[in-house]
Length: 244
Image (cartoon, rainbow, N blue to C red; front, side, top):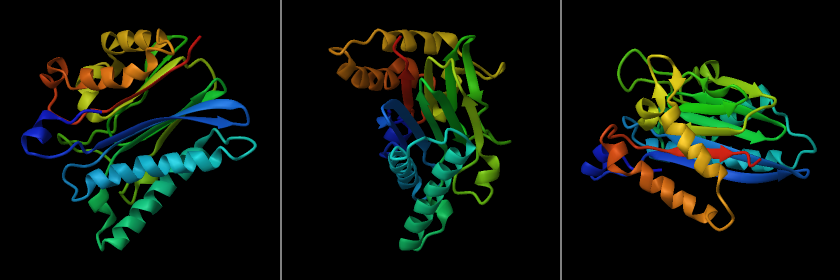
């Protein structure tokens, strides 16, 4: 996660939030990835993104107590509904409308048993599978620049996109819209291979000794001039790679 240069110049803070957590469910290892981008036009967008990611992890943690995980649309709906409730409660406590906490939300839950991805808003989810890289869900961009869908909107559930991949996913990446133009070929609606392939290969080659260094390396990459010369927005990138 890295603050955008436009935000830094205004003395602002990074309004993205992302997380990568490992969970155990009846002996099976799961990785949960979440990315949320607080709307710059919203009074509490940063707080909304924070609530979204934190609540999603709380929901997954509780579900891990079940004998069997429901890897389907019902799981995605529970995550989103829990987030919307948490944001509504925060808004009520601060006497603000829910839209003051507007944010996008992207999530993925993956293991050798399957992969579930969900998305409301822009940003992207890229998978690597048997047929190479693929864009799981098309970013939800509006008619105008910087227009998208937020999890706080009344019709957010209708806009929710969910995909299930029972097998074959070896790597995945979730990213906020600050990376869209670098990570995707927008004309073709496809992932940009030269962006993802080196990162996935680097992740697959990690050892127990080098693994703790990857977070700082990714943060340095996202804050580099190579990236900032092409985008001035906040940037978040969450990655999971299956070690073979």
